[in-house]
Length: 158
Image (cartoon, rainbow, N blue to C red; front, side):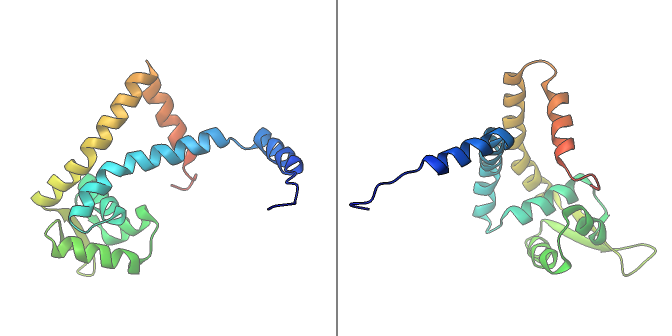
């Protein structure tokens, strides 16, 4: 503002102190990597009116055919209410089919349809290419290091 001196020296000293204990560089790289990693699938999903929640459901159901709704809830760490809307849209759109469990009729087992498998592949291909390119640029042994790093970033209970 006019007439007032803007002394940021204390603020800059506080920020510098934080820089010693907080790894802003890695945090920002993770933000940008996530943005770009999800950007290609987001564009594909948008054409169908779907979002990232749909992507996660299609991905995990495709990776583990026959998983139960309870298993999916546990994997995604979301509420039944959150899953119900997304799952209904995917079933109604023909990407997921739900089958009653053979022993327990209350159990609902999930499978991707042929269309769901094609969607899961279309979403995974650009992500897989991005990963392969980044690992190639990182050099030999990078895949194991990245896997270990990402596994260590997850909560221990997962």
